Amino acid sequence: MFLPVIGAVVGTSLGIMQWLALRSGFQVAGWALASAIGVGVGLTLGTTMIEFLGLTKGNIIDELVGLTVIGTAFGVSLGVMQWLVLRRVGPGTAWWIPANAIGMGVGFLVGGLMAAALVGSFRNAGGLIMIVVFSGLAVGALTGFILPRLIPPQVQVRET
Image (cartoon, rainbow, N blue to C red; front, side, top):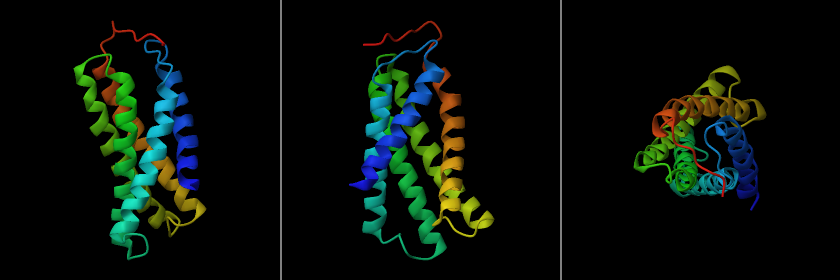
């Protein structure tokens, strides 16, 4: 029960920050809620998957694969929920889903590698911070590149 709550808090924060960045030409009331649900579900699903696959307490390779699985599940879930809001803009917005999946999957992997290299582990506070920072940078860069190409400049989505 703890993980979905943490995911919802992180998702709400992420959604609000994205909404603030997008609001000048793209205003959507449900963005933060979609983000909260997407992150909560994605983290829970990803964690369940790695536990089922036995990737939680193995060697470093298993754990890095596990982080990639969690990040990808996180990204797919977040991308789907946010796409439900974006889809009104046009059919090309479906690219938002793989952009988030790839960004989060790569970000969690790079964060895990950086944590292992710089702080010796990703199972401590420093390691978790590295994962959050690098996954945020990866998904931010990829989705920041993709989003303007998905939404034509003349399109405005009104709050509902």
